[in-house]
Length: 214
Image (cartoon, rainbow, N blue to C red; front, top):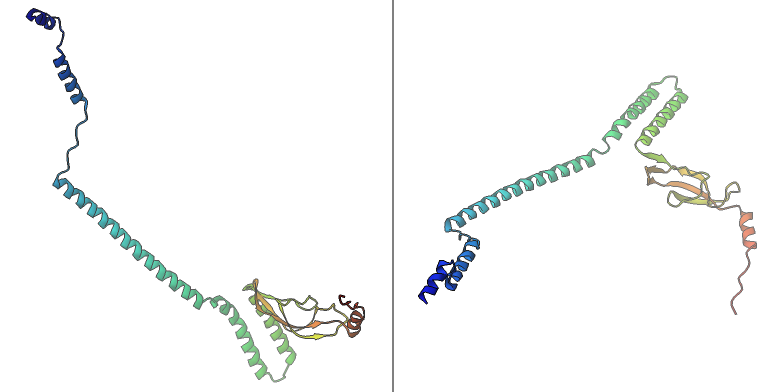
């Protein structure tokens, strides 16, 4: 028996127990190393880093909030200023007409030969230029006479008999209406045709009386 065991070792054969030990050693060498558990110092350092990140984010938030508040204040101020001085350009354009009318009144008061026609022509010219300035700022006169009556643009003051115009047509304009761009600024006050008396009577006579249901 001793010779047989000796012969097996001599020939390079490994006993079974040694094979298992070799296998366990190989598996142990191939397994990954376990991570080192963080120490208290590591946790403290990580906590300090997180505190610094939080502090930086908080400071960024404060700066962004301050910028937003400043923007809101500037926007509100601009809104108030725009509302307060919205008519500045229009008034500046109207001042020359105020000057012209003042000069016209002064000239008419001091005129010795009293020429009303010159005054009328001056006022008409000033009015014409004034309308041009207002149109530049979006004013649009409403054309009414001869147009169909439109309750969105016209205010009917009366109805009149008129054979020249179709019924529900504007015959006369008492006060001109205006649009400010596409919005009604003031309706035109007008009179509206309702047809002649003969026409209305003919329409009445031509009506067929309705027959009551049995």
